[in-house]
Length: 110
Length: 115
Image (cartoon, rainbow over all chains, first blue to last red; front, side):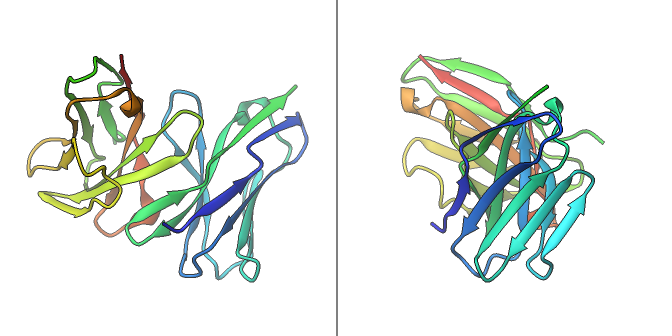
C-alpha cells in the first residue's frame, strides 16, 4: 500500500508561535492532499486541502505548502492557539480510499 | 443537515461475542467508507460501499469482518467472534455520489473495547 509519511509525531508550541507539520508521499498519481484535525474522542474533520497544480493554499491561519518535485507537503499553523491543540493527519487518495499519515499530536501552551 | 451518525459510540464486548457497528451517512450521500484507528495510530481504510454494493474491501481482514450497506437503513460493520486485537475506534465516512474520495465527512466513531 502506498504510504504517506508524517513528522513530527508530537509537537509542542507556545501560544502565538508557528506550528509546522510535514508529510511525504510516494505515489506521484496522488492528486489531492487534505489535512484532517481530530480532537480527543471525535472523528477527523477536514481542515484544508490542496491540489498539486498549486504550490500554496491559505485559509485563515492555516496554510498548506506543496513541493511537487520533492513529493512533500506541509501544514503551517500561524499564531497557534491553545484551541488548536489536537492531532493532525495528512492524507492522500489512492483510488477510492484515503491513505492517512500516522498523525502529529500538537499541544499549544499559553 | 445532520452529519454522519454512528452508534453506538462505545461498545464493550467479551472475547467471542459479535460486534455490530452502525453508520448513517449524511443526507444525500450514497457512498460509505469504514476506517479503523488503533490507539496512537492513523486511520486505516477497511471497506468502501455504495448502496447494496461492496466496491472495495481490500482493507478488511479476511475472516470475521463483514460490511453491508442495504437499500434502506444504515451501513453495518459486523465483527464476529471478537478478539482483544479488535479493540479500536471505528470511523465511518460518507461522500456524495459526485464528490469522490476528496469529500469524505467522518462520523464521531464507535470505540470498541474487547474484554
